[in-house]
Structure formats: C-alpha cells, structure tokens
Image (cartoon, rainbow, N blue to C red; front, side, top):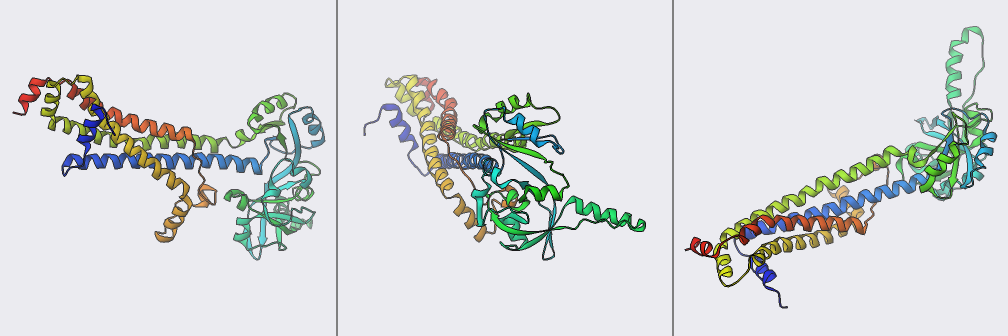
Length: 420
C-alpha cells in the first residue's frame, strides 16, 4: 500500500526500537486504550442503570399519583374530576403505609400497599412480575417479593401476622387505660401468602407487600378512604403536561404528582454521576496525551538533523507539521481502537466478569443491596461511543501540536548545523 509522505514518515518514526522513546509510545497507547475502555464501560453501565431504573419504576408505579399527603375521604368525587382528563387511560385507588409482619418469630417492617386487583392491572405490571403462586388478593391474601421471602423463609401458602399502626396504638393505649378497665383491643391480622413477585429491584422485592384494598383500609381504619389514586396516561414522558392540566381541576390540598417528580432524586443523582464520571475518567486519556507529547518532543530533538535534511530537500513546513501530528493521530487511533474493542467486550461480558471477581477474589463489585439490581445493567449508545472516541482522538492529536509546531519552525541550516 502506497502512503503519502507525511504518514509514511510518521510510521517510520513510530517503528518499535529498543529505546526509551518506544517504551513511552507503548505506554501512551496503553493509556489511551485503558481510558477509552473504562469510559465506554462506565458510561454504558450508567446509561443501562438509568434505563432499567426507569423501566422498573414505571413497571411498579403509575405515571401519576393523586394524593393530599393524608387521607382522601371522598375518592369518588376525585374520580369524577379525573374522568374529565382525556389523556388519562386508567385509575386505581390505593392505601400504602408501613406495617410490622411476623413469621416464625422473625420480624420485618415492609410497606404494605392495598390495591384493587382488577384496576391495578391497568396501572402497573405487578402481575407480570409474579413468579410463584397466583395474582390473588382476596380478603386474607398477600403477595410478597422474592427478597422478603428469602429473608423470612416464607413460601406460597404460609401465613404471616401483620401488625398495623392501629394494632400497635391499641396495645399502647390498653396499657395506659388498664387501670380504668378499658379492654378495647385490636387483634393483628393473619394473611396467607398467595404469590411471590420478582421485579428485579432489591428495594421493591424486599420492602413491599401487596394486599386487598379493603384489607388495607381495615388495617388503617380508613372507613372507605384511601391514601391516593394511581393514574396511567397515554404517554409517561408527557406526564408532567397531564399533571399540570389535572391540577387545574383538582382542589388543594389534593394534587397530582408525576413519576419523574416522585423519583427526581434518583434521576438527578444518576445524571450528575454520569457527567462526573465522564469528566474524571477523561483525565486517563489526558495523562496518555501528555505521554504522547513528551514522546514527540523527544523525537523532534533526536530527529533535528532529519528535519533539516527534509527541509533542505524541499519539504514544506506544513508537511513537517503533519508528520508529527500524524504520529499523535496514529497513537490515538490505535489506542482508541483497542480501547473500543476491549470496552465493548467488557460491556458484553460484564456480569460473568463480576461473578469471576466475586468467586475468585471475593470482591463484590455490584452489591444488589446498594444498587437495587440483581445484575449489572448496560446500554451502549452509539452517540456516547462516538463522543468518547472523538474526544480521545482529539486529545491525542492536540498532544502532538506543540512538538509539531516546534519541528515545523526549524530552519534547515540551523537544524543541519546542530547535529554536526
């Protein structure tokens, strides 16, 4: 393959030799490779984490939630207002709050959510996450998550004792009123596990149980009231527009909130972390760029005679400039290509690598108790890859700019005399 003058000379100067310059060049290529590889891996994982978190939230929650921070005593009137908004496709009331559950002398404190099983099918995907049992929420039934099932050792058909705030309050009140002869006491409720769900989010699989709406209302003494109404819209990403329209019809303190607002801290934290990781990991490529610059400065000093000879034979300054810029570009392209290949490989096999690290070195890279997911998610966007590769190549190209300008400005007579 015939090459033009500039890349031919650049490749000639980059040919491996047993010199310190060659060692620095190899280190620079490895630095660019590592920088690109880590950037692709981290940004892909962050993008996948953001996507999967959004899907899990939308799978377990509605697009909009109508609530007043307390008890909605007249849910029927609120439903009439909701029906006036054409972009709302389904609505389901719910009761939600903390409870204390007991099974085989084991205690846990999940959130209990009381739902209407028929209406809930239209506002969440809970039934799709069921892996054992059936989606049965009769009066004394409960559906629990896989992590809670493991923690307490419960299976389908087992019975748990549920203590609501009303039960605990009555126990404390009974102790206070014992001397007065007041014997009023609310017994805890016994519920049968009819199904086990697995959403893939540790927080939901451990921290939520689902019961019949009437059961939850009885446990919380709501007398027909609800804590909120879940709404499904025609487009979850336009929920804020529908929320604004609906809030004009609702009367304070009852207001609608969209799923992005309710989970705002998660998405803001992810977006900030993704930007910071890109910024910090780019410094790996910058360090490699300084290695390239030091290499080319050394090369220009060593090749001063060659530069003078090329200029004396008619080489123009722009050609000398491109010889040394091409060296930085070649190192950047080589390092970026290796980093791209290794980064995509690690993204593809991220979970097997995680398992190997856990089994061999006992390093838990992605604990589900912290990150909420069973496995490491990933989403590789072509736009992210293009930005990472483009920035890396640009850094390497600019790294050769100073030594290239120095070489281009050399006068041929001075360059030839310097070496003799």
